[in-house]
Picture 1: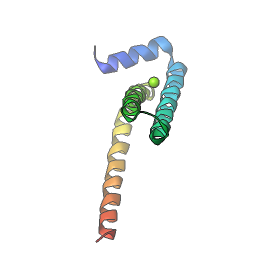
Picture 2: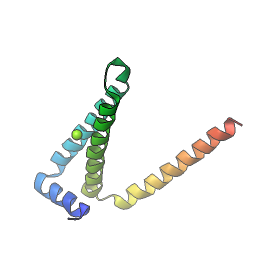
Picture 3: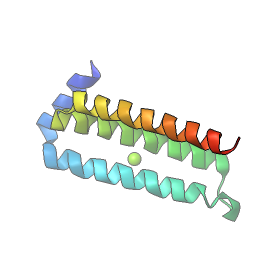
Picture 4: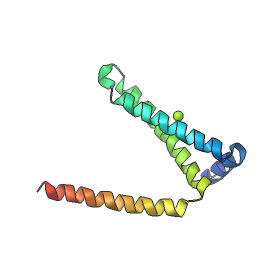
Length: 100
Ligand SMILES: [Mg+2]
């Protein structure tokens, strides 16, 4: 089954507000896992922390992709992403220039 179809079916069966709630929950879970990673010196296992972060990144990415379908913003999303990556490239170049 194609990813787009899965997302459309999830949206159709569960509804927009439910999918927005799940997106918020998954983003919050990723935030929690990243905070825990910063505390690995306090006894948290690093490999387990990275495994947990990876799982939450996947969960969050899937929900972001669903939001793209929900709001029908694929073209705009890609345009903004290109612009932001270009801006990051320019900032990195400026940073390197500053170090010369
Ligand atoms: Mg999760």
